[in-house]
Length: 93
Image 1 (cartoon, rainbow, N blue to C red):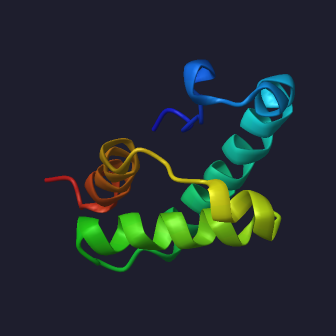
Image 2 (cartoon, one colour):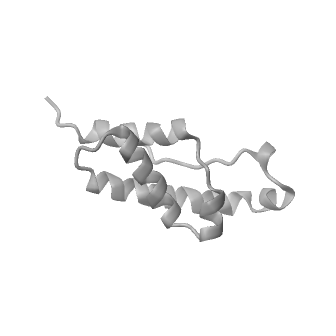
């Protein structure tokens, strides 16, 4: 699995957020990667939607509460990470 990465849309950021974009992206990416690894290790056959919800919850729990409140990842991209976790956990025939 390629490591997930968070990229913020510069056109949707305030001037202050734009100045902080790079460190914020790094922090969000780090939290998402940690959540992905934890979820991958704990995966026990849950459906993709549940895995996506767990990923979001674990990612937000790894962030400062103010940052977590403002973090709204693209649901389709989060689902894609969840789908990869589920697919990689299935036994190979």
